[in-house]
Image (cartoon, rainbow, N blue to C red; front, top):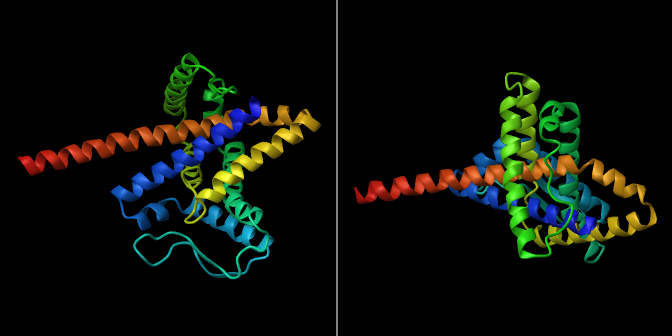
Length: 249
């Protein structure tokens, strides 16, 4: 059940990150969004390049942001990864791994104070198997966001470490949204990683202990993305309402 829950929350991270990125790109020029998220964009693009090279592909005409309106990262792959199916999954997985590694090191180096204030509020390690458990999961998710906001407000926001940590976490979590053409590969990568970790955990129980030790970081990433999604939806709704009222006025 633990491995299934971990896979579920990783899928939540990818889908919510994708939704936040799409909503931001709908309100602001996508090139501006990707420029603001530059640290995450850089790590994700590096991960994809490494994935292409490892799977036998050739990387040409690589840019962090294309010159068109979308401004998305670009990598021309000629030829395509030589490993069937698994190659595409690996190319999609390494950007996620790169961003997750960046979140881990940002937490270790800069985010100790903030993480410490919300470490006891984590997402569930069991999947909901009933309607009551599903509603409990939703309530716990709201509580996570509430506790995270409270922890951020109680942190020393004047300290450059806190500001840098929050900026990096936002960039890295939002840029866990699949890169163009990588959506199916990203979903396949998460399922594959979940299965691999489950097999590894059965063979080496210490793996479970290590993964549970990183659960607060995963929970914090979920909380950040849920908070960003809530704020974005509120802002988008208010802007839409103002536009409707101005037209009818």
